[in-house]
Structure formats: structure tokens, C-alpha cells
Length: 306
Image (tube, rainbow, N blue to C red):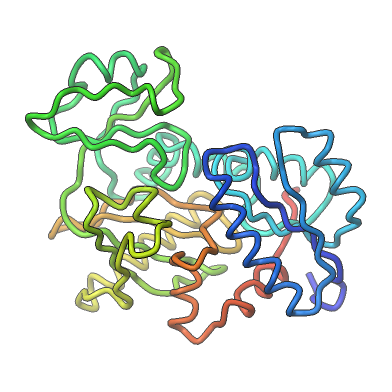
């Protein structure tokens, strides 16, 4: 899409997911950058009211939609499908890539099919995970379709089986039980068809959870990660392979664990954060790409799925 034809941009913010507050911060940063770049920006606070969203999008007469939503609805293919039907080009991945990336068990099957190492897992009803060890400890409990480490719990040897009432999953709802991978946490941003850098993430919290990701001082980012060139390139290669296998476009971010022998793919985020503590803008800046330039690139590469 030619930048000369793009004048009006609608920024989608908020949303009904558990990541609403983070989305508002990402959207605010994107909207300020877009205004500074000279675009006519309309901010749309997205709720669960689809009729209101269609009305707001129609009224905005936008050339491009900047999707700054995180979590369910905004990141799982729902918004993407609506925008496809409205023939409105949008940033980030399309509906199928978004849906597959958000479905953690499905994404892992796709990763494994192209040779990307993943941790063993089982998907069981919540009540089963609460009552017994489905796989040997230590393991990680994860909702099958949330982002930003929402609802993630680690169960170690000697721990009681935790109640999972706070996950918002009904007793018969499904949860993923995944082997815990000890070691180092790294992340790689993909921009188009190019991996940007490898960042190692350290935190004093139990793991890189929601608070560690978004609270000031919640984690430390080492960029470039202190890995030898072979390992550094391996992390970049696996992340690009995952991006391509899911059919992602625009910007994505892959999260991996390194156990001292191999990297294991945890997930691919198709709507990475744009907050002051977010990793993608940090990696872009490491390569000399300013935040405004990153946002500009994302707008220029907006598209619809066929």
C-alpha cells in the first residue's frame, strides 16, 4: 500500500480482554506517533459491542486501521475477520495467523511440524488439572487462548495443586499443562520477513509474567543477548520460521526458552506491545529504527486477508 494514499487512520484501543489496560497504553503511543507523522487519527475505544464498533469504523472513513488491541477478540482473529469483511486494511497479522497463534496447542503443533522444538504438553479440563498431575512436575499451567502470560502458573515439586478460579476458565474449560523448561528466556521480534535482534529477559519474579512484562522495573532486557553467534542466529532462525509457519505478516514477536542445549518455542505474539517497557520498539531502536519509523512501517504494510 502506498503511503501517499493513506491519510486517515483509525486506532483500535482497549477491547474487552484482560489486557485492556495495556492496549490503551499501546494505542496511545501509536496514536501520538501517527499524529506526529501527519496522519488524521481517530481513536476508537473497542468494547464487546460489535454494532458500535462497525458504526465507529464506518464513521471514521479510515484508509487504514491500526490494531493496538491485545488478547482475546483483538488478537485471536475476531477483529481481523470483521475488518476483512469491511475491506479495511489493518496492521499486524491476518485472521488465520492470528487465530492459530492465539490457540497455544494449535500453534505448537504447527511449530513442531516445521521442526521447531516445543515442550511436551497435555490439554485437559481445568478440574482435571486441579486434581492431579497430568504430566511430571515441574510443569506450567496455561489458558489455551490468552496472551501476555495471563493466567500462567508454575507447579513445582512439593507445591500443592493450585486452585484455578482466577483464570476465568469454567471447571470443564480446557487448560494446557506444559513441561517447564528451565533456563534463559529470550525473545525475537520479526518485522516483515526480517528478525531484528535477540533480547534476553531476566526478572526477580518467579517467571516473566504479566507484571514482569508491563510494570516499570519488572524485568531487565539485555540486548543483544549474550549468546555466541551460532546460538544467536539459531534463535533468529527459529523465530522467523515460526512467523512464516503461522502465516504472520507485519510485526510479530517470538518467545523462547534456552535450556543450555536447545531453544524451545513458547509462543508467537501477533500483537506485540507498544508500551514504554515493550520489547519490539526496543529491538527496532537497537537497529536504528525509531518508534515513529516503526509505526510508519506498520501502517504502510497494512493489508486485508483475501
